[in-house]
Length: 74
Picture 1 (cartoon, one colour):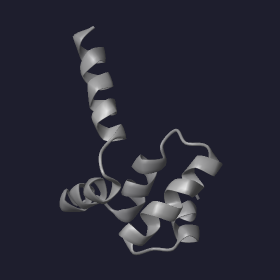
Picture 2: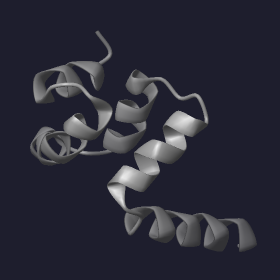
Picture 3: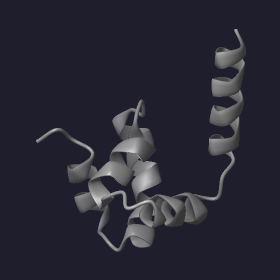
Picture 4: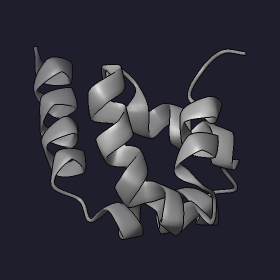
């Protein structure tokens, strides 16, 4: 039960983290752009991922279409 509570608390913290700060932290930890995109969009439907792409793509120095391409398994 403790592990589940810790996971929920960590999810809550991430939900309210500044997007630019989260991306900066991921880059500082040597995550690739593809890994960052995949983590940001995990569990999101296309429409929500597209909204996020419009905010996050400029922070990753890529276009929205590139962001959406990176989130797929192709």
